Length: 254
Image 1 (cartoon, helix red, strand yellow):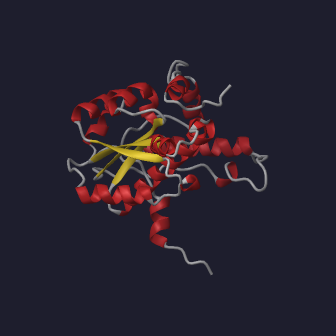
Image 2 (image 1 turned 90 degrees about the horizontal axis):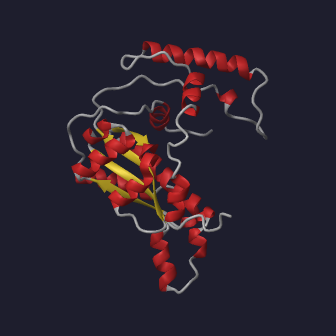
Image 3 (image 1 turned 90 degrees about the vertical axis):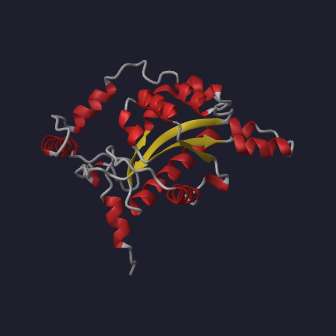
């Protein structure tokens, strides 16, 4: 019989994003431990294609707050930016006089993104195990070119995610996830025959969650949220592809 660590399962299934932090910075030991956890994440072909930048300069944090639209990040105990990184392996290729073409391909760009994303999740799990909390922030992509400038990122690197970590000042209610029947399929992709009715039920569940939670109450269902996402300006993040190519990736894209 498989024995699972109930405390780990409980932690994973009760994750909430923390956006309000106590005014308490993380210690050097805590930051080192979180980085260690990130380094022990799975990495594609053991190529270790991600890096992490600790953002400490208040001015840079302020700029990131403007870029992301989330001023609360400046109050976190520590702020990381997770980087897809083939630059380090480029140095190895140059030292051994090997053609670096593969490092510039879509495949290796995605590998770096995967490595960075998995490492990000490891940090979050480790942080929560340490009594901390945080939010993973894709909103740094609102102006990826400016983030690259702020962090002085070289070629073959790209900022993937921000990560605000700190001591929680509150504990938000757990946001309900959709039923597994709507997102887990056996053998092949097939939405359930009663998908429409399941979505109605899930919309009602989410509407009740937003309408009764202890802070930031609002009227919104899951469907409404998705429709709002699709209604955003087409200009938002429209420069992503150009910036990725500017960093030297997607050389194989026709």
